Length: 241
Length: 218
Picture 1 (tube, chains in turn yellow, blue):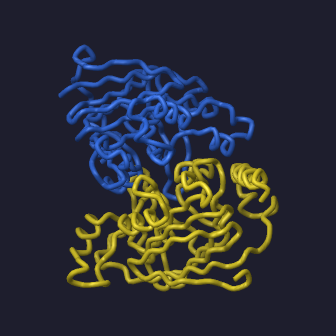
Picture 2 (cartoon, each protein chain N blue to C red):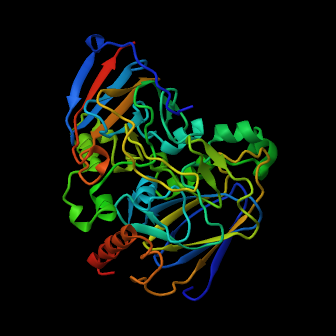
Picture 3 (spheres, rainbow over the protein chains, first blue to last red):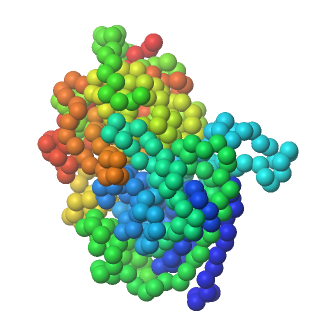
C-alpha cells in the first residue's frame, strides 16, 4: 500500500469516512463543474480534538482557504494543510445542508419512491458517518466546503459564486496528524441552483513526500502556522512518534 | 438583516427577575425558560462576551455559527438575527441591540490557540475555553455537556470584519460603555458565557472589563 495510490469516487449525495495516517496527500478532483464536498476532521487518537473554524480563520487572518493555509484543531495543532489548489478559494463559513433545506430547494424525495436516487442532505450524511466513527450529532461543527466560493460584501451579506468550480479542479490536503476524515458530497447551502448537483468527486490518497520542516510552504506561510506546526510536532514527539 | 440594526429596549432593570455583574475572566451558566429575555450589557465598552447556547432539552444540539449565518445569509449578528442550533432549530432571536454588530466567526480564545496566535509563552494565560470548561465542571447540569459540546460561539460586542477578498481582521470599535444586546429564548435554552480575559488582543485596550447579565420574564 505504501507506494500505491488509493482512490474512491464519491457520487453526488455520497459520503465517506475513514482513518488516514499523517503525511498522506489527499487529492480531491471535481469531475464536473460546481462541485461541493463538505469535510470534517478529527484527531484519530483523540476524537474530542477536531477542526476548529474560528481558530483556523483568525490565526491566518482569512475568511477563505487556499494553498498555504492550515486546518487547525481546537488544541492549537495542524490537522491538515492545503498544499496544492487550482481554485484559490474554498469555503468554511456556510456549513452543510439539512434535510429540510434539501427538500425545500430540490423537492421532497423518498427512498420508497426513488430508491438510491433520493436526494441526500449534508447533515444526514455527516451524522451517519459520525455515529459510525463513535461520535454523534454533538460533534457536528462548522466544516470546510471544498470547491465552493462564498464571499461577503461590505455589509456582511453572503454571495455564492456559481462559476467558481470548473471541471477537473483539484485541491490537495496533506494530513499533519492521524485523522478521521468525514466527507459528504452534498450541495453548499448557499448554492442558488435548484437542480440537485450531479458532480462526482474523486479522492486519491497518495503517499507521503517525506518529512515536513521549516522550509515547507505551509509551515512558513505565517508565524502562526509555524507555531501550530511546532505544537503538532511536540505532540507526536512526546509520544515517541 | 443583521446590519447595524439599532433597536432599543423598553425593559427596565427594576423589573428583571435576575441581575448580576460578571467580572472579566469569569463565567456564567444558566438556563432560560421559554419566552425569557436575556440582556448582556457591555458596562465599560469594547469587552467581548463569548457566548454559547444549547437546547436545554437536547443538549447535543448546540449553537451553530454556520447555521445562524446561512439562515440569515449574513455573517454579522444584530437585532432581528435568529440564533440557530446545529440542527437548524431556532434557539433565540435578538430583539434589541445598541451596539450594532456582533461577531460569530472569531470564536473563543484558548490556551492552545493563544500559543498559535501570539507566542508559545502565552500558554499559562487565562482564556475563554478554560472558563467554559470550569463552568461545565462546576454546574449542576454540567455533566450533560463536555468538550465535545464546545462549538464555535458568539462574541457579543466584537467587531471582526470580513472583506470581499476573503480577508479577516479584528477591529476596534462599534461598542461603547452601556451598549447592550437582548435576546428572547424560544424554548428552554442553556446559556454559557465567558467574559473574555484576553490580554493579547488590543480590542479592549488590554483591559478586560465586567459585563452585566439581566433576565426578564415576558
